[in-house]
Image (cartoon, rainbow, N blue to C red; front, side, top):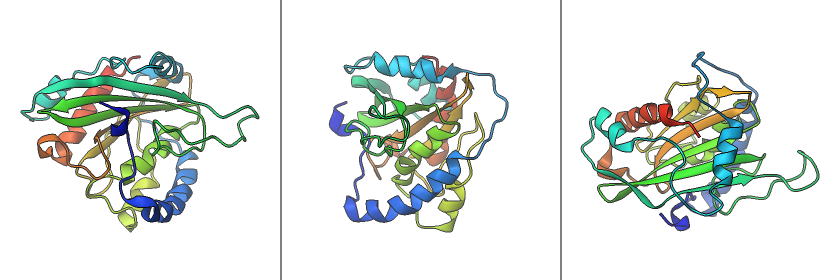
Length: 236
């Protein structure tokens, strides 16, 4: 994995501007909602932040993800290996001036909107030689991780973020522990992780590249299954 493989908008500035206004309205509404299914806490914002801090240089994935087991459980036959490097991370904080100060966009995670401080880690894999990415985001804001990953989920193969179906999906905060995906998404799945001490942590499985196909053309159900299996390994 090279930094050029990190999440990027592949459709040009015009689509990004058009989608940005609509997504921003959804982001603000989404972050104000709350939802939980009562799963036992698996990690914390502090744990993810510490793990991201240890990735000031690319290194091994800090989480106990068993991608090979996740693929088998999903009924996929591909062979998984960590990419090189296997993971990158960042604690993206606002500049001095308090929480209302503008947050500059991250060069490492350009699809995550610069609306608040967050911690982000990408663990990259090769499945039969093709890239598959697991992104973990943590924020101090309740339900904030879903809002921060929403633009990347919108930039997924098969997704049309201008439809009523997408807007309805995006405006509903997923229950903690429940895997979900945008309508018609063919290469992404999302799950919120139960946390200790407040805040929000979420995991996204996605083909490494906006609008890219998944390795071996994994089905949407298989990608969701992979996310559901990997969530149990999110212990930083």
